[in-house]
Amino acid sequence: MLAYLNGNYLPLDEARISPMDRGFLFGDGAYEVIPVYSRRPFRLQQHLERLERTLAALQLANPLSKEQWAEVVQRLVDDHGSEDQGVYLQVTRGAAPVRDQAFPRPAVAPTIFAYADRLPTPSAELLATGGTALTAEDFRWLRCDLKTVSLVANVLLRQLSAAAGCTETILLRDGLVMEGSASNVLVVQDGVILAPPKSNLILPGVTYDVVLELAAANGIPTQVRPVAEAELRGADEVWVTSSTKEVLPITRIDDAPVADGRPGPLAARMNALYQDFKNQVMRRADA
Image 1 (tube, helix red, strand yellow):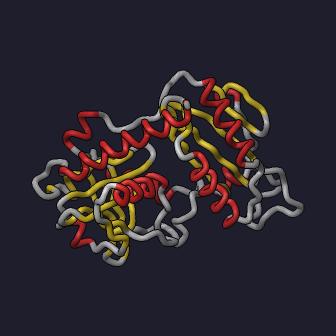
Image 2 (cartoon, rainbow, N blue to C red):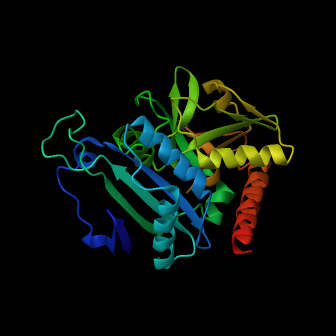
Image 3 (cartoon, rainbow, N blue to C red):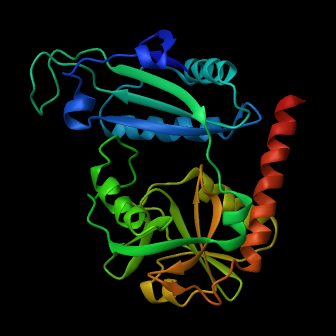
């Protein structure tokens, strides 16, 4: 596979960074994952805008313009063999001469890395049965709205569900639903989609936005408001959304069924709307 590293394209297994890179030493950097369908990046501008917001919060200048990022993404997509892909972008503060938490002065060149790989989306079998989840108290920091490479808390929380053979870990804080360890969480009650509001405690998901836009366009009622743990456990349906999970129903939480333990009708409808929307976007890109 081809990779992009600091202005050069080279085989991924030949890409090398300094052990003094601050991304390696401190997790001092930002990343994005851009889904690609039929070799067309999906919502590229929204992903690049989120990368820009994270970099600005880290006081790290974006090293490439949106046009330059788009060129990198398309070059990697064109080189890869899969129709559907995920393109990973990462920017760190770079390699400093000494290990010190403070920003290096003078500033060093950032490290820019990107590569494309196959995009794993839910299988038809998983969509038919639904995924499983367990809950855990959210012990992450207070800037979960930033997509940084400092992900060890998410790793530990995701490992809880992985070790239990579950699809995702749903995070709770002060009795409220936050998000998944690697996804957003939506709850359905009486035909209404309940969406935890964006805040510093939740990553602003691009797929989350698409789902709410589709709901509004198709007359499906939504409420963006805090969602209580009791509402999660008493929900008619629970979904997790992300670029890789798309719209995935969760049918068991903490080994208890969600409603009757089967994917609900609104999940099936939203999944159909989401797939149709993807196809429309790709057709417009080809026009």
